[in-house]
Length: 316
Image (cartoon, rainbow, N blue to C red; front, side, top):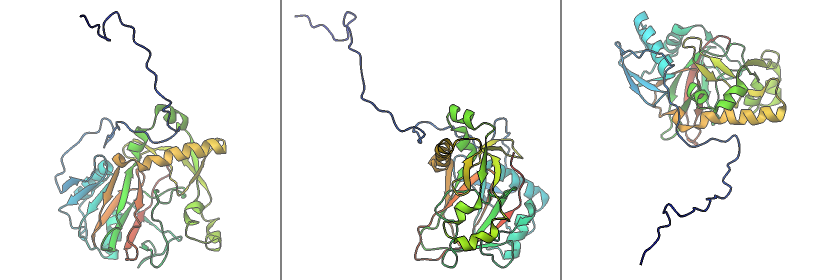
């Protein structure tokens, strides 16, 4: 007896159909990610003056072998700056800097800015973050002070008191976030500008009476949806869910839908690094290239941090 195979050349295959499997538009999609740590054409060079220990694929590195309480020679500052450009956020363990030493280290990168919307520490340009005293930014992805015409270049944060568990901070690489947008989305936002306003973010934990006096000081501003890094030239997504309210020239529904998609890019784990704090640790991040998220999972314990921010440039 001869058995004819269903796959023989003379057989005719029935068309294969699958049930509807469309996912909602503008969501995050599985699949490979493009994970470039540095811009194309960038030359990787060894670090000679300290050790760099990567903490993530494209973002986050621990710097070992430096005492930040001492003045840093120009060669060290230049190498730290290169590490910042390449890794976007740097971690220095166990520094225990005084307020003045923390400010002096940050001033290597420019003038320090003040923020009257947040509680200050021992100096006007030191922000003291203590949720048990004054509510502040936690559990939301954001880039600091994009509601300013010149948002901060970066920030130096030190944990003075850490909870026994929890209280981590996460950072997202917004160059990787841009790289992995669908081409049609990149085309839609090419050259687009967006409005940034301090009110949506601060209204989460401040009353109208508290915010009203600052409306004239901080009017809404426009920034590019995609900015170029002033030192590397790399394109980076520059919108965030705390302060970006709409894309200029788009209908409200279209702007809202597109911003929801863009905000989600910070949520992709492959673009992130997560840091578990110990008292006296320092994080120094490039505010132009990142978003961050302070994880509020430590109640009823206390977490006290102090931050100094470095004045930045006008995004382009």
